[in-house]
Image 1 (cartoon, rainbow, N blue to C red):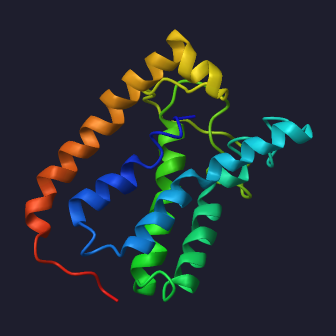
Image 2 (cartoon, rainbow, N blue to C red):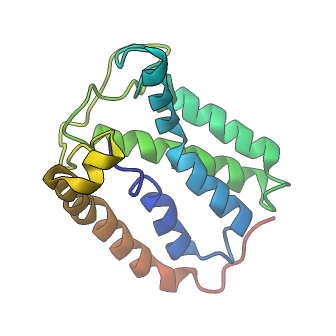
Length: 179
């Protein structure tokens, strides 16, 4: 998986590009949370759920169906988030879908069950430049492997996204959030 530090990167880049005048703060915060949500499936390890199970890590919570359900939730709660239903649903869907895409770009694990429940097959993109992150925080923060993950994510995720975001930002000035 990509690290929990990097899964919010696409949402943060969108926030930089569009600005909080276009994305209400409440929606922005919820979208960051939803970018992390699929990895809550790791709790299954504590209950004996195997990695390869549809309930396991990178199983159903890493599917496009799950992203759609999350997007539908965004549509339902849009008024609470001070956003239009379309914007709320789309951004929450994209936050979860970006999580799936980032994990499919990593070079380890079993892949993502992107098309669950229609297929149990786990997928990676053909190009996998991102170093897979260890599941243990201790390993992530105290080993050479964790450092390699951070460098990989900076090069392949953060830098390109921020370059795009800051390039797009001038074109978005003056645009307001749709409510």
